[in-house]
Length: 594
Image 1: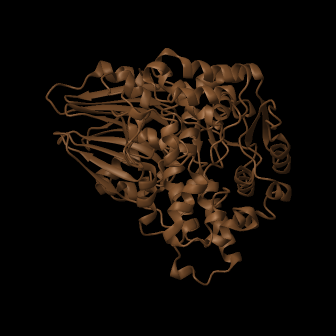
Image 2: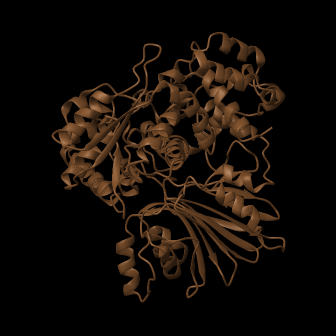
Image 3: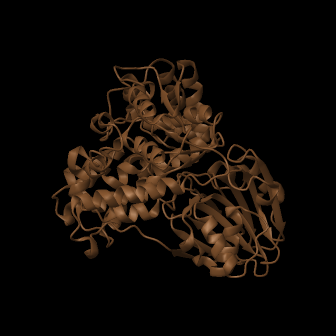
């Protein structure tokens, strides 16, 4: 897990190493253990290293393989790198390191862009072919690792974070009105390739982009999630599904222990992270460090789930750390979390992950997390209303239960110049739901949430907040083989027992029943959900800042109404509407976007 950056010029000059150095330095938090720059005429790569596999200098990046004529910068972890190394050695390749980075380089030399089909893991990488000058960019199947792009007629710049691109200078920072419509409608998710800024795009997940020296490029989508039934599993019983699910998850968890440093677990006390701990215990893991977080209560909402995380830690004998966040850390933590965001992310979980990661990074460099289970296994309350809905009605029913607000409500919130002339969010969901590979309305929603919402909300949130402290987070529920299996499970098995029924039944006898039978919890930060005092003032300051007044995105009368009653208006999913607006302005101002 690291940070990468690069530039490829199309107009003749050499790549600007000074700009690239600033971009790379901007990501020191992602890679505090080392840095490197490499340039060759019009192309240059930069890297910040977090040493996880092959801690020696041989694993440093950008990695230059003179024999192959390749240079590589890589962010992520390849869990099957040892097996691939053996296979490549059998094919005649010789290695100078024990890193997973070199495996990608040798794999590219052997299989070309099809190397991605061989990789089990999370990754974003850039490969430069010395002879041709061609640049190859790739991102993992489920978008766990980010890659941001600033592509103009003169040059392409790319980086692991959006702020790193801004640090390089010259990026168009005007606001993309279509992306703004997604942010305000689609639960603050802006799907790839868009970002909130016109000048920055995201390489979509499961995509390989080959960029030629003249700036032209071709994209190949190398994997797609399938949420439909398989004929070879038509006769499976509930027990068969449970056994297969646990076996696949056990493999995913075991894969994510690959490291040359200790690996801990973020233990919320919910079924997902608790099952990860239980499976590691089954695999013989001892002295496992686990971590949970708690905040002060506010507005009648509890701020911690220590009861359940402690129960699991005691059950499996982990080295458990209960991290109680003093209220004095929360307000500065909000500003710091916003600064760590590559894009505006409205979830109050961000500050929780940020502060948790700060403390966890003092103990370990790698953790596993239960993120993703709700999306792939139907754990959210907007899925049951879709059960039995005709496939043709799925878009409308999904929009009713998921969208923060429908299109007709936007003109009362956004000023006219920021409004599109068409309902882009509904159009996007309509196109996604129309794709083959999702049998029912529930399947279509689960596929959409797994491949779109999950990528640009929870997964991005975990990556940004953990990497703000040089902490690598691994997500076994997003092992692509596990997702392929779970996608084929009939929806009724997922939605049973109040959601994630198949997982709950499969977990009986593995994790304590009290964890399985508890009411679904969240990563609570009550002070943000219930805005008052200094937290409300922080939002007020953002929305009345001269930059916000000049930008004039929001209807002032509506802002005044929300500020007068800050906890009254909620989105469809119960989020604080005022926080959603304030967060956008806080992020724009933090990035000095005017």
